[in-house]
Each structure stands twice: as structure tokens, then as C-alpha cells.
Length: 277
Image 1 (cartoon, rainbow, N blue to C red):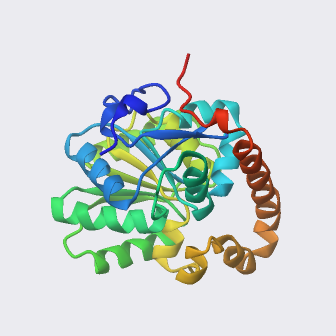
Image 2 (cartoon, rainbow, N blue to C red; image 1 turned 135 degrees about the horizontal axis):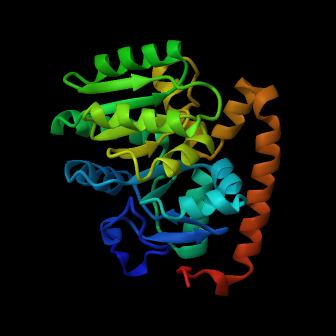
Image 3 (cartoon, rainbow, N blue to C red; image 1 turned 90 degrees about the vertical axis):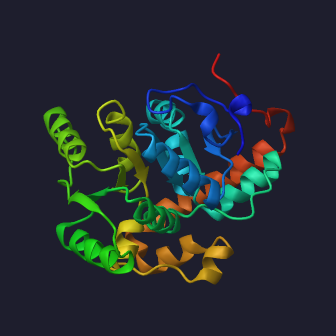
């Protein structure tokens, strides 16, 4: 496992043992973890078994650009235990700028599946937070069918609005009382990252922000073919499926990512771990 001597960022209340998590590299101000599936699953399960709070998020190009431009949320995200390179271009950027030698990205839906598989083996209860009532019901049904013996401690579909502080407290209490060891959050970026950060000191289970994984595993939205995923073209598939909702996101964030990556590549002296001063 990569050790914390090279880890950037501060140790947060949700990450009391920074050396237990993969090293991070600064990507446009956001500290992204150099990690592949096996190590990610191992770290997550270890934290859950030790009852250690932690926040894990999977960041695509859209997430990296959106959160890196939000000063407040970027500061919170940089204290997450792990930000996995969800998008192929994010993996490519880490390899290009830092010679990370990552052979695979850590795709949120696939990470969720792998963690669920190991959670079933370890008998670690899980909680699902996100989705519509209909999609959440389908998700539960599909997961129980796929993972025999999975312990589902609870689930809820929150209102599609900003929760009050009282509601946030109540949600945390429900999740904690369930006895869950792992909390999967499917609210989309940046909403799920903001929720996890706000609940860092209140929610006991390991929090995993997995974005569209809920809709994919519920089979209410199609997943891009593997050949498109492997070539970094998942955004094109999703744009084709939902052009009116996603066209602006991908035109803006993809362009910004390419420009910022070019600038970073042409300034090699900046390719260092940035620690808080």
C-alpha cells in the first residue's frame, strides 16, 4: 500500500490514520488518490471493520472541474480519505503529470459492486442513501438478488432539495441507529460530496459517494459499453442518452479539463505534492 509520507492535505476528523490510505496528487487544486480497485476496496473494508469514519468519493472530469472551482467544497474534499479517479481522463492525467502508472480507473459503479461483494463476505451491513423511491426500490431488489447474504441495514430516498440542519441530524441518527458499516450515497456531484462533508462528524459508517451507480445498478439508466468506457468516451454515451440535461456540463467541463491539463503539463515544476502550509 502507498504510505502517507507523500500524502497531501491535512488529516481530517474522518481520516484519523492518513497513512492507511493511498497517496494523493494535486490535480488543479484537488487532491486525487493514486489508487486502483484492489487497494481501494481493501482500504474501505479495513476502515469499515475498524469502525473508523471515512469519506470516499469517485471523481470524473466533471467532478474534478466542478469541485476544484468551489473553494469551500474543494477544501472539504481535500480532507476526504480517498478521491478515486473515476474517469479515464482523470487516470490519464495522473499518469501524465505524476507517472502514477495506474492501469485502471476506479469507476464508481464498479467500485460499489466490488465493495458490496466484500461486504457480503465480511457480513458488514450497508445503508443506501439517494435515488427516487422507485429507483431505490429497484436498486434494493437487484442488489439482494446479486449478492446473496447482503445485509441491508436500511435505505432512504431524501427530498430533492437542500435539507435543513435538523433534517441532516435526523438522517445521521437514522443511519447510525441502523448499525450500518458502509453508507452508499447516490446524490450526484457535487451534492453527494457536500452531503458527506457536512455529515463528516455525525455519520459513523464509512461514506462512499458513488454518483450514478444507483441508477445503473437499479437499471433505470443504461451504462456505456465497455469499449466506450475504456477509451474515455463514456461522456459521449451519456450525452447521447440525455442531451438536453448534459450538453452544457460536458462542453464546459471537458474543455476546461483539457485546457487546465495542458497548462499543468507545460509547467512541470508544479507537479509536486502540495501540502497545507
